[in-house]
Image (cartoon, rainbow, N blue to C red):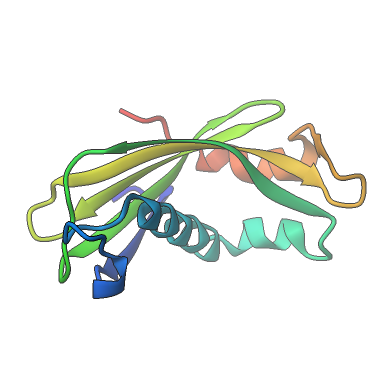
Length: 141
């Protein structure tokens, strides 16, 4: 695994399931968010940019593809990477895979902006934020 990518593991529990016995579609949003938190936990240099609560990353778009069902007891891994860095937004690519067979259960692209919290508006991704994120960009194959 490339060091620019993070892996977050989780187990499907009964409360994740819908009436059909597979993971409810809304739960994948939580799995993906857990993967993004793990990504930033693995990169303290990024977290340091947000000390003082002046800036925040804010999701503005999420596109998710549900590929196959996951069921109770499945061990999943969420692979997360920064796939694109623009001047005003960035995109993370994520894949949820079943650990036992490596099959993709879902994949998603999340677009986010950098928010100036005090002004409550998106700002350009530049300076220290850009310098820190640029080496993390990993193109999606």
